[in-house]
Image (cartoon, rainbow, N blue to C red):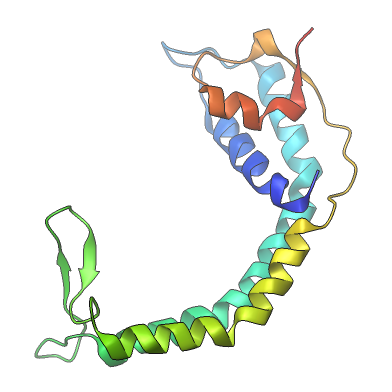
Length: 159
């Protein structure tokens, strides 16, 4: 298992951890225990991945935010004008189709290309060898999609 594989597993475990017993699903204490035990097992490695991502992303995000402020249309108070387009997406006025903004964004991406490559290498490293706490498949509530089940397959006991 690669480190990048832990991220969707973590997200699926977090979703499973958020489930509560309802009319649609019964979440047993044993199921919740197994989910939490597996989350605790990989939390340290997930924290390391997030720290590495934040380290390289914080400067890139700041540079991109600065470019948005520089190239956006401003209101009377000097604030960026934000609008909702026809498809319901919120956008910043003055950026779409702005050749200078697009060129400078490409420069920022080029500037951080090596850091992005280093982060990708980290994600491609082997994760620690985990012996996951298996949860019997029949204990899983019926709220999971096929995709969820696929992501959670390392912790599923089919027997």
